[in-house]
Image (cartoon, rainbow, N blue to C red):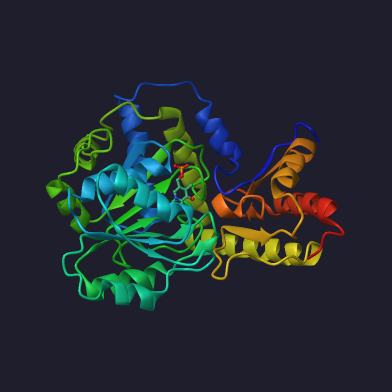
Length: 363
Ligand SMILES: *Cc1c(COP(=O)(O)O)cnc(C)c1O
């Protein structure tokens, strides 16, 4: 049991053997034809995942870097923006704004709830100068799914603002249509639905966002989309990329392509249903999210159960990683992920480990 390593965490997620193999190959230099081919393939496959014919840019960073890249490339000092928050990651967008001296308006949702389309419409009324509206596709801290298609349509109807979506934990898990839904910038990271190691950030950048990035005045260097766009023409990145992780990403994308995007989404529907059926049957505890995504299930622990100790025990004794609650939810919920390469057998093992310790503790 001790050397077992089952990850039921909402990022990083487990890696397919093909990805491990690709990352373990001998290193090669990035200013080469070989890397150019690999990189071009990753970008082309990422366009397929994003469902866009616009640009996809790649950076060496975690998902937060991709989020920061959207703020610095789209905005100028004094710009009015709206951040719709549904948990920790919306707050992160706000924190990035503040780090660059911007003061966004915030539309908060009750934790566990998705952004309310009517509240968004009311908030947007009478704000003609708004530069951008920021959303999470799925908020990993609460397990909530936002109806990005509807929310983006409302932004379009009520304002000229850019629609910016953090889909770090949503992409390649939940349906997302960058072009068809009119999304201007969609950000992601390699370590969740994309089934790769942490280390790569991606941004889908539409035409309106590209124009905005030409005009934006915030300081930027490492995350300058204009430099990334320029090197892309030569199938290069401005700086040394995480070459081995790019190789891993190419292998993971090949798997996603072979499966088909609709099947990838269906797989997550099936995993979520399986996990929830089992959790209901074995634990019978309430689920946290009122508007749940298929990426993870948040479960409310009974009063008196120390959630931090519970998950530490499971990791130490069973070799299974399960995420706890963040901020105010610390110790009070656990978040069992079912995204990316996580399997039904992994979920079975996780629920079993939880059930063995929670017997008799039913709420
Ligand atoms: C994981 C995640 C991020 C980025 O986190 P990093 O640790 O920087 O990769 C951003 N938004 C959401 C919704 C996430 O789940």
